[in-house]
Length: 179
Image (cartoon, rainbow, N blue to C red; front, top):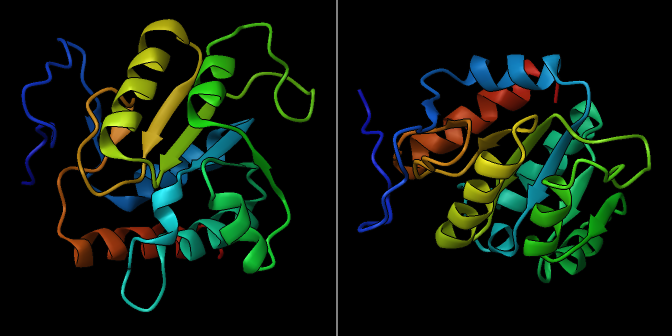
């Protein structure tokens, strides 16, 4: 079994930790069950190689396969535009985290709060802090870290995975969603 220990040492996540995703079907089921999912795509997604493609290319396919709204952080929006993807909102990472924990925020489209937030491509320590804030102050929002290192503050997270196994999990999720 893979280790479910925080990749960032010397940080203590507390007694409540993320459930470990041992099968990609868990993520697929969560996405299908969600009424209002949201994908937060960090700026490192344009640099992270998944073999033949970058993480940003995977995120585009994921968002398009099940029509998940996407929030791009950092310079990611320009990378999305280069790839012809025009359906992402732009917002700084800390700002979207603050809005998600606001119970009165009506979402990017004004239709209400999101119930499932998928996070990928952010620096580990930034995702750690964002997910911690959501865990403690947005109890109706469930979170899934799609990154390859265990994020204890998410509701669900992959364990620490080698790149090839992480890529395989992501591809399995995409295939099972019809992408």
